[in-house]
Structure formats: structure tokens, C-alpha cells
Image (cartoon, rainbow, N blue to C red; front, side, top):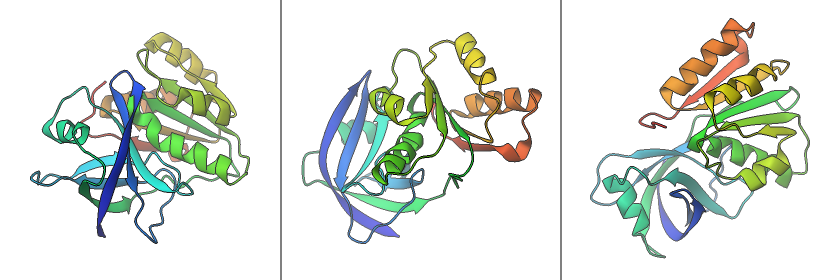
Length: 211
């Protein structure tokens, strides 16, 4: 459903990564890990972003890198409080089974759905064995939060360290992968080659994202 949302503020997370906060529409409900489409006036193409705020929080937010300097992101950086954009969603779901041991595998800004999931779990006071591997080149958005909320977390910066950390966590039940198309594909193949079954792997490809 198409909704209008009002911009509140932006917050720098460092390394050209920002979280953009908006008023949450009344009666909007969503599940942690879902995404939405955002449209700015004068730009006809919707832009998908994972919702990085937990459903129990009072605002709606998404987080993105602004390195690309696309027209959409330039306009995002120029938003002022009260400006309006359009919101379509929520869309999709990661179908988390909190009775199982889950491993969240994120590349760069692919951390956003997992941040929302871990925050929501914490806000509800529930416990589940959710581990995290967040691979990034020096910038790990939300590390100060996810490092506390995940049962086990590692933050590799090289491909070699990432593969070592991944192979050390093959005892999980379900593997969620979020990142660029090539990252998701390569990581899934590694898991399959090491005995993980197809139905244990869930993927979230960030189309257009290159790291």
C-alpha cells in the first residue's frame, strides 16, 4: 500500500553510511527483516531498502551507503525535517524460526535486515541463538549493537578471514545470506560444498549493490 512518510533526521554511521529516519505511519505493521520501496518526488523509479528499524521502535528507518552519489541518494542527503517521500510496503519476509540456531551472514550494508531482527528480539526480551558474520572492508555499520545482541559475532575484513569464520560455524540449522548478488551466490556455493543442504539456506540479494 502506498503511504506518505515525513522525514525526521539522518544520522551518520561513518564510512559514507547513513540512517534516514521517518515518522512511522499509523497502524503500520511489519516483520523484522522486511524491506520496502521508497519514491522521491520527480524520480519515477522506486528504490528498495531493507527496513533497519525494529517494528517495536517508534520511527521507520533505513540505512544505506551514499558512496554511489546517485540522484536518489543526493536527494536523500538534502532532505530536511518535514519533507515527504512515498513508501510502498512492507514487502517480503525472512521467515525466522527462533527455535532453531540461525547464522546471519551479511556483506556491507546487507547487515540492515539482521540489525532489525536482533533489535526486535532484544526489545521483546526473547532469547534465540542467532549468530552473525558481518564481512566488510573496514566499515561495519551497527557493530556496537549487533556485537552485543548476537549470540556470537565476527567481523572479518578479508575474504580469507570470512571463509575461516564461515567454516567454523557450519553447526547452525539455518543460514541467512544478505549482500550483493555475487556475494550471496559465492557464499551459498561454499555452504553447499561443505555439506549444508539447499533448504537450510535463505538469501536476500541487494540488487544493484556492489561492494
